[in-house]
Image (tube, rainbow, N blue to C red; front, top):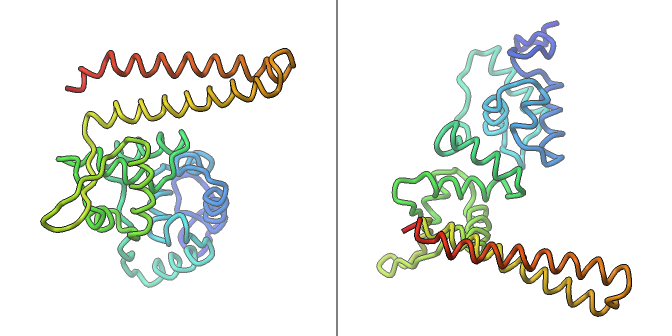
Length: 234
């Protein structure tokens, strides 16, 4: 069955149907990654990222409008409008972004991180990130603030141009591990404090005490290991 866009049903390999686009929108609303949406539609991940990128991005994708515009374009034979920048590093960058999103990192934050990670000198200004990723300055600001807080990126000041420069280097991995371990240690200490409040002999107190002891040991081991192997980054 042809849908007016040269599509034949929803068969894999054909053009996206209106139903496909509705499923893409539902997936985005549900927080699914491009890779997961592609898997459910039996399509390449690049097809999904291209479809979303040229039709408003993850936050502005409208399936009906996307289908109408694409159908009109196919009938008129007009070229596709410029789309949002693809992931830095091509397929490799896309895979890193998807892995980061699966671990809980917001997609925009993952894109900024990968842009810095795969850049030649590991340095970008906020304006440079905005321009290269074709996103709003506010989106970049939120992403880099998170990356700085978690130790993935450091902020440097350019005194001549009076602007911030965001830098990722080998030491970033050490700092990010240490920050994560300290946060885990804080959680351990909070659990042990709550165990005392609940009563060390109560079921809740015993559960919290065991969790606190485990998290404390893991975080201390992680910090010790990071210090021991830090020389590998030199």
